[in-house]
Length: 64
Image (cartoon, rainbow, N blue to C red; front, side, top):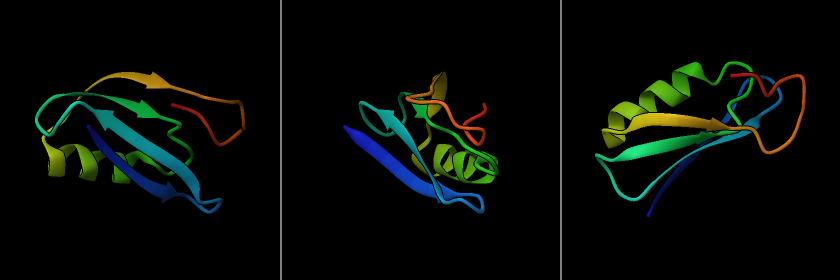
């Protein structure tokens, strides 16, 4: 199981990419404001293919 996480934006929103392993399909969890660069870097680093976005709760900064 691969779990890559990072804080994004001025509010430090925690964003995660979850996949069975590197080079597999992944789910992006709670991408917040200004998460795009971190998501792109994690996708490239782990050779992941995003297939879904999951928002676990509502905030104005949790927008895909």
